[in-house]
Image (cartoon, rainbow, N blue to C red):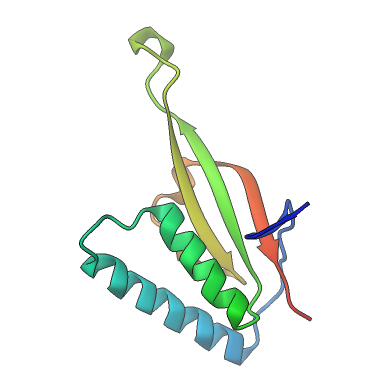
Length: 114
C-alpha cells in the first residue's frame, strides 16, 4: 500500500551516495534549527514528516517509523501509551533519534528513488 509518506512496510536499506548524504545532513541540521525557533512545539511526527517530504523532493531514500511504548502499568490506571516518530536515511537517524530506543516500531513508510 502506498500513502503520502511512502510505501507502508517498505524499509529501504540503501546506502547513500555522497550527494544524498550531504542533502540528508543539511536537512537534519536545518530542521533542528527551525524546530527550536518555532513559536509552537514541533513534535517528532511533524519533524519526521517535514524531513521525509524534503528528502523526497531531493530523491533521497528514507523511512519514517512510528513506534509505541507502554505507559503506566495496568495497576495504576493502565491503557496509556507513548508514541514516537523518527526518520532514518541510509545508516543515519535524522529526526527523533534520542528517544527511539524506548519505542517498538509498529509501522514504517519508506521510499526509494532509482
